[in-house]
Length: 233
Image 1: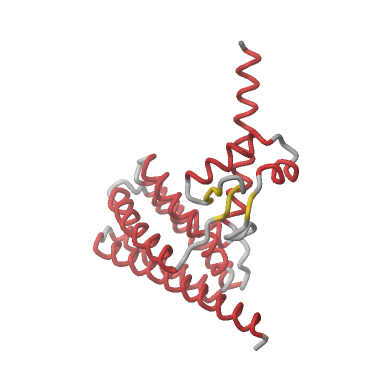
Image 2: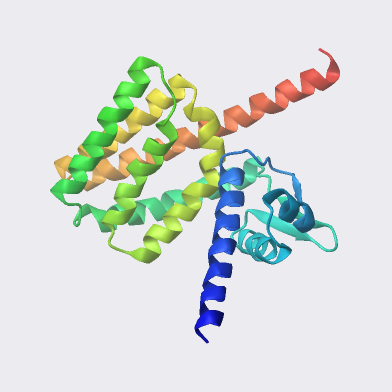
């Protein structure tokens, strides 16, 4: 019996490793939208059996990162302009709820973490080094999520954030966008410090609206570049 339990734990660990590897590659754009993922090919590439790959792909499909095509494998989801509008509409409502829950529960220690995050972001933006800015962006919002003291809220917010992350990664390396993101974070932080909830709502709305607009502009520019390249213009 002990051997069976140990084996199952090993299998669960392997599934988790395969899942996290594929998920991170999709989120960071290393596996692009529209890419076909085939179970047998991935198993060979990752040097594992097909079982953990199959389970990992199923989890990613349930989360909306992939969709299944019978007898053909899985395709990485691509997001249309409507999908992005829809994502940010939902994310805004959820993040406002998270902010409401975090507003009364945010501790001085968590505010210090936010301030440290902003100082580290300042250093990178001012020095022109974009490396690590994505992690700081994710961590800033994560402090708010965790301050809700709700595991469910943290999970929901993180999932919505992850679905937009591959687009934000492309933008965060543009220092102009990184500076705008940082400025939005400062306004959110100051609203928490001032204990001014209307100001906090306004800051979050402005921050997410700006992120949505920049992502849509980036996608439109990418389409234009692809069109001119294909046309030889």
